[in-house]
Image (cartoon, rainbow, N blue to C red; front, side, top):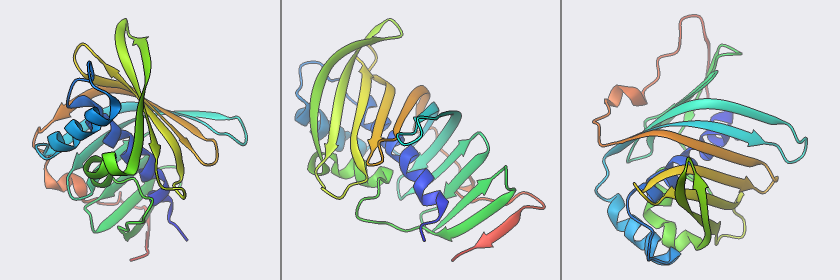
Length: 219
């Protein structure tokens, strides 16, 4: 059985990976393939990133919607910490902690890679080989022109149908991300503050359960 943390962290990791992809270099005058190649080279210079965002989910089957605010801290080596309203997900690359405030429960499991996982390292390092990318056009976001880039997975068994990213052309900052999965769930991320190479303490990637919380260790 796949623990909940792996499902939840997949969406957010993909979004942050796209954020880094689209914040490193300008898109004007390039085609989509050139953009991805430049971003792949640029990724080698990044040490860490902190991103604040708002997540909005429209569920394809029920038509219901949810919205959450969140922050993600990430370092290479599949280390990241995701804090959402009511949930915290942390991994050091070996173990994963998922805390639910509503249940006051922490689930701990080994960090696992799968062929169709969307970890930040995988997307950033292999985007040109894993995705077909096209530029859809332009749109105004917050009174600034943004280029819309669509990435479609080449793997037929991917859980993701496509990703779209909106890149502000003036300061080359990603402002919006959308992901559509195979269940027709549409997840939109509105990106707030982004900080690169601020020097994240390694303690951020280890989780201490709150006093009184139930701990389920699956390792």
